[in-house]
Length: 113
Image (cartoon, rainbow, N blue to C red; front, side, top):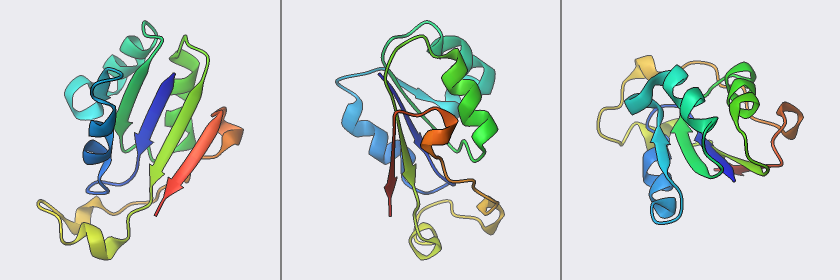
């Protein structure tokens, strides 16, 4: 299974991904870079990827490189008021986010408000 946890900076992606730490390898976009994630996902049957992934194009490339069978995308749609209370918040972190859909190829998309 491939699980993507996406959302804008300070949405809570890393915190949310921790619940999978004993089940699947967790790949943080910050640590491996975009191309590194694509290479790694192509070799794994199970993984959790967490990162902004704000466009359908980025998420589709992730799916195209995945060699497993089932995919799930969590979109953390965290309100701006909540993000402002988090350490390291900056207004430069706000940019358009294209919400994920099953039309991108995901088996399941879950929005967390």
